[in-house]
Length: 158
Image (tube, rainbow, N blue to C red; front, side):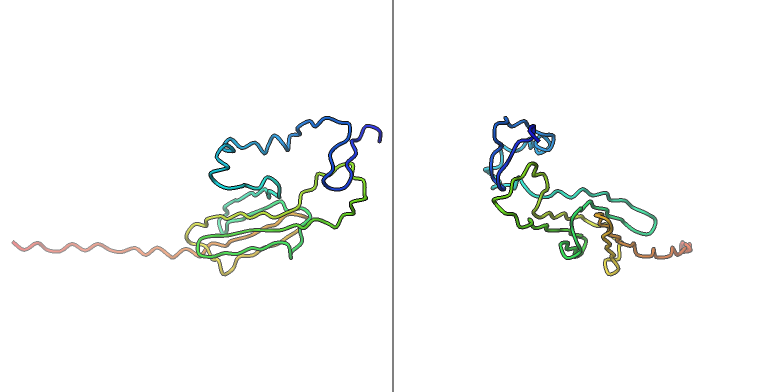
């Protein structure tokens, strides 16, 4: 335990160890950060849910990694051609007198909005949360049958 940096409470600084950027810090790099004063403050903390979206013959399937979330933490809505998936994970109560050796878990909220193609059945959207993976299935509407239309030729009057 002598090699670990010690942090007291939630907001304390590391004692005796210089701060080295982690890969997580580097991945937050924003090439447009100079524009932040023009756009307003942008949050730097929070949760980023990773999504996979795939199309099958019968549906569009959205898979999201949401570890630590329960059903009541998630909100899914479909309005028109928009599917919005959002969630909020609250920070556990912590005692400021506790000693933390590592604080990497993230708390906060996320929201993602997807534009759905035409021909989906938003009345039968299904969502399932299993082992930290949220699966939202948006079924397609049954395709209308194609009807062959015969072309008739009209006699030309001379």
